[in-house]
Amino acid sequence: MQGLMTLPGSVAMTSKWSAYGLLFASVSVFADDAARLEYSSANDFTEISLELKSIHNLNADTVSASITLSEKAKARTTAITTLAYGKQMTLYIDGRRLYTSHVQGIVGGSLRVAVPKDLAAEWATRYLH
Image (cartoon, rainbow, N blue to C red; front, side):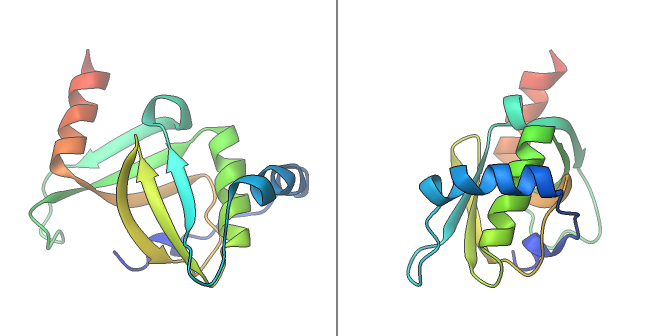
């Protein structure tokens, strides 16, 4: 899904610089490697909203999810997308590789992604109980 990483966001100086040290050790952004942006829905998301049906969804195998990130995940995301700007980045949620996208902007505290329907069903089962 192209355009995943085009959401605007602000870069807080304190969060940005403290996260850079960790990222240089954990994120590789080389010519042949895509950066990795990994989330745990249990720890990194404070809110998940699923759009179950839409005339705008052209892929019957996915559901649109609006996600609000925790403060730690927001700082990590902003730092990683800053480092990976103009490069490829692969998105992982709950250990599942979703897709690789070209980073065209700095992502802040929320994002909208297409997730496989089985992952959305897993979230519904996990978080509705």
